[in-house]
Length: 270
Length: 270
DNA sequence: CCGACTTTGTGCATACCTTCACAAGCGGTA
DNA sequence: TACCGCTTGTGAAGGTATGCACAAAGTCGG
Ligand SMILES: NC(=O)c1ccc[n+]([C@@H]2O[C@H](COP(=O)([O-])OP(=O)(O)OC[C@H]3O[C@@H](n4cnc5c(N)ncnc54)[C@H](O)[C@@H]3O)[C@@H](O)[C@H]2O)c1
Ligand SMILES: NC(=O)c1ccc[n+]([C@@H]2O[C@H](COP(=O)([O-])OP(=O)(O)OC[C@H]3O[C@@H](n4cnc5c(N)ncnc54)[C@H](O)[C@@H]3O)[C@@H](O)[C@H]2O)c1
Image (cartoon, rainbow over all chains, first blue to last red; front, top):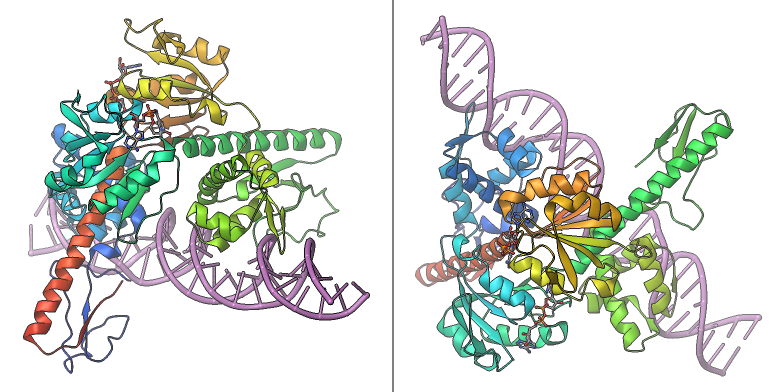
């Protein structure tokens, strides 16, 4: 077991001399304060799933469901129920054995872990096809990610309101981002401009970036980038089509073989 | 070692009686034909990266680069070079020791593995904000994923050309998809409609789906779904913001502690 | 209050992925 | 040809994530 669970362990201190008591896997060195935080212990994959559970649970709340079992929730989220329970155990133990989880309690705890108790203002850069769609999309606002600023290099767009917010010129990015406390930057510019835009966002103090441009961004260690890359998604799907076709033709070939030789059955091994 | 590499091993057969020769990890049962295909052996994570390498390499071709080392390519793709070499080894051994990889050769082999030698026609369902952006996006066409059909339930849209293609009514989905050999369906409808649209795509024979609607789709085993979920991406970023803030405040608290007690240094353990 | 039943939380085995480290192989050079 | 330096390809190790299976812990009916 790696994760330290339980409510009051955000900060564990070991005053020099008084050590040795801890059942920690790593022995703290002499004269050292060990600060361990729960957050870091949650695997990234689990975080992504928690966000999905949260959405499913929100739907449940709307339907008036008050309690849900891991089996039901996992089915709705399309995952294995053991995995779901393990994911929830990172958040804490808020279920009742024999009953399940209280939906509202779970929602509030997942929200806390995901940091959704704070507001996260979003800036969209590049108000073209995609930028327009994003700016007009209501799904951000409603989930606690208000779009607070829009930027484009095109001067014809400057001042034009899109989705209720006037577009700013890219040159004002630092001032506006600081002023409106932007914490997430969304890049929807052509690929050529993406790295430059990213650099400007970073120097404006933005530490989280969602990138739609098909380029690999280079950023400092303290900046978190996530990319949405449709070409990659398509190609992964294409790979699966190809794999399926290969399998089918292999099976076909094997079956032909059977008809020639005297074999009983064909097994496709993983 | 699990992966069977080399060119001519797509179909390995063991005729009954003549077995025992194979150095396979699993002993084939009596009277059984074992068909093993290379494709399945490539980990999903590697496939996603191969798509990224492919794009970087395409850029290299345009710049006139003919040869590239794993070190250079991995830097450009933002991954560890050992990982890159292992990923490429799934594709085959096409590098030259002491030199690197021939860019064009690599491109063609990755394209082959990803199944990009075939054309994959795409249908977009739900021509709203996002659907318009997708239909107008040139990036699909240029990468071998022509948008071949658009669908919407809104009759005012029927027949209206978007990005050069007239919108069809959703009720014609089966006929049109079959006719135009659609192999990938993109769902850009409101969440409420997504599952129904998905079902219709599946019964039209579409086996690959890219879903933008924030719902978990239920599909048969032989259908591959990938989702693009902006809310989840945002929430993962939010989690990192929260984690960073926690770390900062923990360190702050610890430093305060130091000033009170007599401690030498603070270590934040992973 | 008890016992049957349900469901959580988690130890453990397994599978998967990443990273290191280095032998093998290749081109260039003398 | 023989050597040298560079880079690939890949065992092996380590780490992370997944899924099973079950004890622990609760509910609920009697
Ligand atoms: N449209 C889609 O559906 C879609 C899908 C997947 C990926 N993408 C990617 O998203 C990005 C945007 O796509 P799009 O179709 O909206 O393109 P677009 O050409 O319609 O819009 C790009 C916008 O960015 C602005 N821009 C250019 N340089 C800029 C800079 N330096 N600073 C600020 N703004 C700048 C342009 O003025 C324009 O308004 C591209 O990288 C594209 O590859 C788009
Ligand atoms: N707009 C964005 O930037 C954005 C971002 C992330 C996710 N999404 C998601 O993408 C989806 C579409 O978003 P949008 O902003 O384009 O919505 P939208 O309301 O602008 O467009 C939805 C379109 O789907 C059509 N539609 C509804 N029911 C349909 C059905 N049964 N069959 C076919 N078409 C149908 C509607 O007529 C409309 O044209 C939503 O699920 C949304 O959550 C959108």
